[in-house]
Length: 124
Image (cartoon, rainbow, N blue to C red):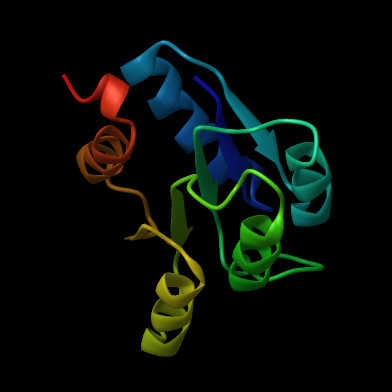
């Protein structure tokens, strides 16, 4: 299983990675730079993407737009995980192809539940 995490906060990456490792026994692929994450996606296909909204170089919505335009990424679930509360950001994320939206700070059981619902092989 390959879960891509794109967040410019080392702390948030550590929290999400820890939850994924504890719950699924898997490592995540973390990137603090969304442009580098997109370059990785040109050579690799994740099963799920977790992306922040506020990042340098690209917003989470810009990341989703470019990610969806990348060959083979149209059907990969994307979850936006952010502290942003602007409903327009949420609407745009869904319009661009986000499957879910989680608020920071991360609530562990909601985070795991959302991942389980989007990773059918691990929904047992």
